[in-house]
Image (cartoon, rainbow over all chains, first blue to last red; front, side, top):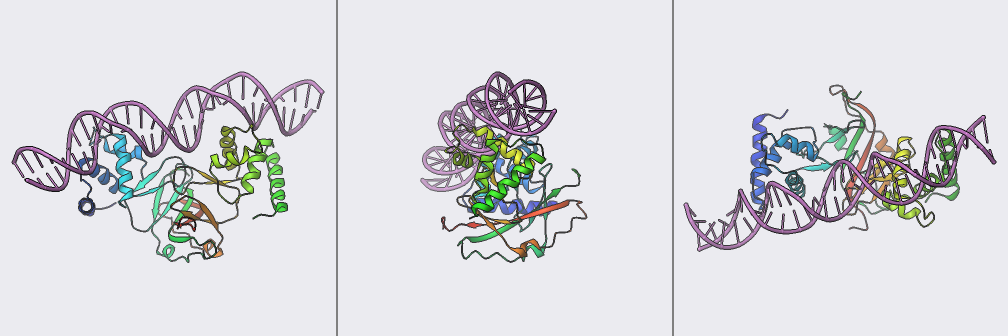
Amino acid sequence: MESQTHLNQKVQRFSEECRQKGLSVTHQRLAVYKKLAATKSHPTVEELYDLIVPDFPMMSLATVYKTLETFEKHGFVSKTRPTGEKARFDANLNPHHHLVCKVCGCIEDVYDEALSRINLPDTKTSNFRIEDFRVDFRGVCSECQ
Amino acid sequence: MESQTHLNQKVQRFSEECRQKGLSVTHQRLAVYKKLAATKSHPTVEELYDLIVPDFPMMSLATVYKTLETFEKHGFVSKTRPTGEKARFDANLNPHHHLVCKVCGCIEDVYDEALSRINLPDTKTSNFRIEDFRVDFRGVCSECQ
DNA sequence: TAAAAATTTGATAATAATTATTATTTAATA
DNA sequence: TATTAAATAATAATTATTATCAAATTTTTA
């Protein structure tokens, strides 16, 4: 788990960056960012909404959608959709990879230095410009086994 | 491109496996499988439907959906959804990875022996059982540059 | 600090992708 | 070829997401 002070620092940085980018720092945006930064569970939009509503009952689902879209555009969160129908979000932008459960769709993070050092494939012929890469390890999580 | 004879063999094997698994070999299923096996473009359901309709005008979109779901369940095709909203399908089950264009969403295959030899991360603590993995190289395709 | 301007929100409508339903048709097999 | 189980086609329903827009909030500026 992230320490409380670390989390606060992260939210602090987030607020500053919002101002730099001309984004209003609203209660809604702070609520979404705090909840997402406080979890490792890569929630769906609806899961995140359900996490926020107890603290913030007038929050609208559409606002969560729009907020996450804005966050992604400005590089505050990453969006992934390895299986299933729903997109999942993550406020952790450190380079990492994913363990994706084929059964329930949950995602765990993998930190492994070795994975950052894999050789990029040769794309001269196709002329594809590689910018980054992600490894999805697929299998079954402990709960679903 | 796959040679015509190779494609025919593949369709042949598909038919046999269907029978072994108790799946009827219908015109619709053959049409879907043939079109998918003949392309490297990882089409969406709708794209595949549009490819099939000229040859097979009474094909229903819902049938393409259901057929692909059946194929995936029986391991005839793989489904991926690296970006964007729509799922994409592939009849190529050889181990390979993907170049995913951030702009148009197109997918090219990557064959690289070295990638098959990456070390799996240690999942003792989380007890996640890894079955396989896929690397998505993200960037911009030649068309979109 | 107050007023003006700009942005964001919330409620809801619209759209897009996918899945469910069911009467009809087709394939497998005796 | 007739029987039976499975698959299809047409369409309705559902789910996830995006768009709209008036009202509210936030930021800017005086």
